[in-house]
Length: 193
Image (cartoon, rainbow, N blue to C red):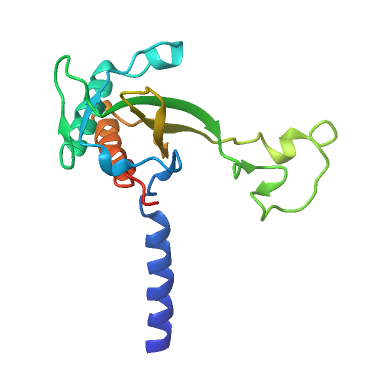
């Protein structure tokens, strides 16, 4: 009996871990040989909405990201206001894209790699027998943070966070998620050489 309850507990644990929220995927890159220890002051520039896709992102969300960046970086560096020249400049971009899930369920072939095997393609098979294809579409959110040397205006560091978003996520939930993404990306700045 203990053996069976142990197996049930193990299966339940695996199921719960599989349903846990996915952490954003974070990638960074930086200029080799740059001395990041010399950086003391910073300034965050406002994000400009330049394309049609950018216009869909709320200006309130953009201002929230800017304040999150300033708050997170202020823990380690001094924020410069006004016309004073900082050591580094921070810019950011938010991209929302619709993507198709590669593991979408297909009535003809089955789910992902565990399908029912090969069947004749739709022109030769009856859609009444197999039903329509079900393709899952999801939103992919990307937060890109660029840091440039203020003197040379050349990029010295980039951090990117990508996460799959729920299609019905409210703007408030998006801001919370983006605030966490800012913290996770900036936790890898400055890079360890």
